[in-house]
Image 1 (cartoon, rainbow, N blue to C red):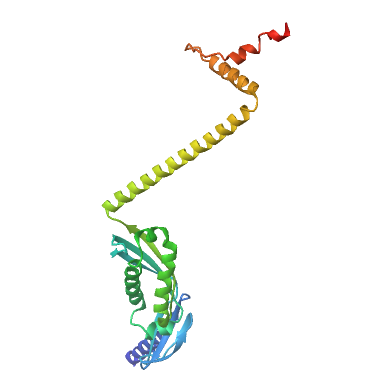
Image 2 (cartoon, rainbow, N blue to C red; image 1 turned 180 degrees about the vertical axis):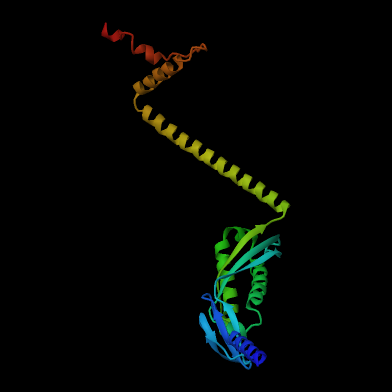
Amino acid sequence: MAIGIGIAVLLVVFILSSAIKIVQQYELGVVFRLGRLVGTRKPGITLIIPFIDRLKKIDTRVITIDVPSQEIITKDNVTARVNAVVFLRVLDAERAVIEVFDFKLATYQMAQTTLRSVLGQHQLDELLAERDRINQVLREIIDEATDPWGVKVSSVEIKDLELPDAMKRSMAAQAEAERERRAKIIHAEGEFQAAQKLLDASRLISQDPAALQLRYLQTLTEIATERTNTLVFPLPMDLIKAFTPNKTDT
């Protein structure tokens, strides 16, 4: 008798443990009854029929999928290696279960294929300068493909773009040449502005001969501070005439 009671108790405990399921706060439970979808259970304690119902839990948190580094060929025939990361979240747990075998694996394969296809349509300079726009294009394409599965792709980010060493050296030489070009342009613009200012100053001084003499005396004053050299300056006759009496006055 005691053995029968013990077996009955164990059977009841086994049935209750099979009937009572706990769904975490970040999960949704999809219930199948004899193979047919009967609904979705929210977080908390839920009851199912043992041996008849099957509960499939789906994580609704943001999931990160790492797309490993792979080789691509850009539109201008440059070979590079890129890797990316995809952020997704399940919005419809029922479709994520019945529409695709493994939504994580399917999204990973879609991201890998789309990454190679989209980047191959751009030139290398576009990949380097317009990464945000390309990330947006990748997100839209992958999100459209995963929408029937109840999966929302919130972001796609290209993490790294690895170039061959020869290409890196070529880009460094190009950047150095560009900096030299800018330096020469700035220097030429400075010479042009200085020449323009000198031209304006000469026009202003030519309006009054006394201004030229004052400028000459100022130059002598500036050079006089240097006592290491002996300088010989021509003395204009006009400057001497200013200090000699005029014969017409006598």
